Length: 143
Image (tube, rainbow, N blue to C red; front, side, top):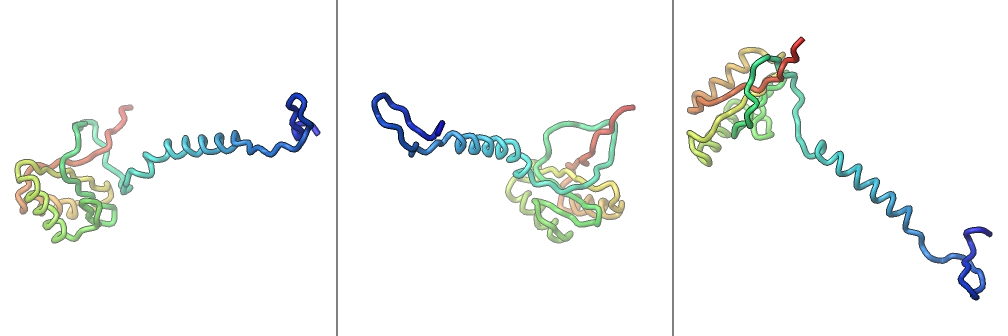
């Protein structure tokens, strides 16, 4: 049988008893490549919102604190769903940890959320003493 018999000089032929690890290494390398390419997508937590488009916008680094207003009006800050009182507590905690002058907020609101909900978030920010905030937008493509 070809491939099943060992031929070593004067030794008699016999069954190959060594484990062939080449297929195992191939599978492990393929899994490693798949893991490396998908790790960035797995680790990046996102909340899907449709951002409004604008032709102008600053592409600077994000501020210290992010506030997301979802389509249904849910407010998220620090990755957690928050009420307006919960948002106030979160802002106070950030100010206590970083100082009032070093904390700014970026607001990411779904384009379909009611105007009043965004104003409520801005009002809470201002009442807690944060006057530095920006809106996250999706840049419009030029036609």
